[in-house]
Amino acid sequence: MEKHKIKSAVRKGYGKIAQRETSCCGPALECCGSNAVQDISKNIGYSEEEMRSVPKGANLGLGCGNPIALASLQEGETVLDLGSGAGFDCFLAAKKVGANGQVIGVDMTAEMIDKARQIASQDGYTNVEFRLGEIENLPVPDNSVDVIISNCVINLSTDKLKVYREAFRVLKPGGRLMVSDIVIIRELPEFIKNSFEAYVGCISGAMLKDEYLGLIDEAGFSEVGVVESASFPVEYMVNDPTVQALLNDLNISQEQLHQVAGVVESIKVTAYKLS
Image (cartoon, rainbow, N blue to C red):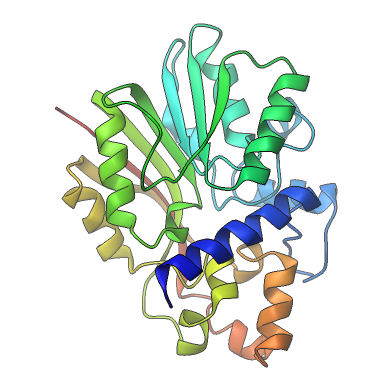
């Protein structure tokens, strides 16, 4: 698949999700409402208190983990969220860093940025801003942030090494990285690897686990480690239109789709910029 076509498909897919207001994820393979989004978020590590604390519309049920839970955010820190979507993790981070801190969300989808900015304005968040940009070319100065978080987004990039090099560039010396993402433990079937829809659904862009961790190390980070890992159900990775495309338009059976189960893991990775 050509990289520019993948990026276009990802931008288009997540633009539609922003306009729809839910990810339409779920094991029932049907369009879901707020209750299903809450269930998905709970299953991937968010507490009821966290979900209640964010503005309406910020949680689209798109993640594969909770990077905030292990980021140990402190009052006054500057936090950068790679692929911030409608701002769910940014709004959680904003409460932890306080009025003296700052949270920056970067997303390449204009519809997501517009949605996040509108929510921030309506709910009076003064320590959060959202910037339109690509995570391979961050609109952020060198050595300017304390913590980088990301939730199930880097797997969507066609140049993951560049993403991590950019992350290293913008972190202050002593800064840290806390990422939730999708990896694979063996190669995917060809019918998944060659699907644009599966790429948008966070499946076919996933790398082998050891190779993924190696990229973080190659980008310059130290003490790269997996804090948590778990087999990730395919139903939580794809939104409803994605699943329907895989099942119908591509003539893929549910049995074939579930060949992915057990291959895909959700991992939480920490790393540090020591100098």
